[in-house]
Length: 231
Image (tube, rainbow, N blue to C red; front, side):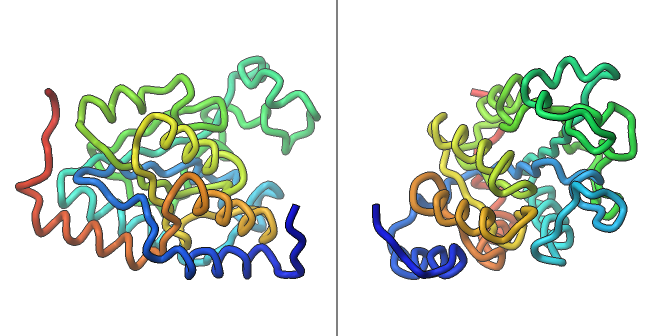
């Protein structure tokens, strides 16, 4: 094992700089998947489970979503929430049982609600997921096939948890995966940057959000060439 005195942040930025010319690249049709941008994880000062990395995260996500809609591209939001007894959380929520525990994010509760700063589109997809990956027992895979998407753009939280799980599942299903750095967040900077490093090295292109916004602007300008729904 290689030993280093550099921080995870330093290691990530060095990796991205040295691999600038080695990317998976972006495809012809992305789906924007926004993972668990809900109050339990975004409302700092109100919920102890909440966190913030870049203070403009929601602003950037709204901008990406707005461009996606202009290009007639799908926008997908997930949130985690469970039944009243928490049974459907399974072992994922079995470590503790406090008011702040995962299995106590109840459907219809304020903790389950999407962040009020989010701008939802009329045709956006909003899905209650139960496990870390946005692909697990949701309609995301079938929707990507039907809409002929070949690229996954992942935002949300946490970087080391549900974002990473979604990224790995996306690559495993044969999709190109892009993570806008400023659009993902975690509770602590060490796991945040360690997982950005790991995702960029193996599973995704972790790019500055400015690059991803430019990608969507190009798609808006050339929307007539984007593959449409169906076979």
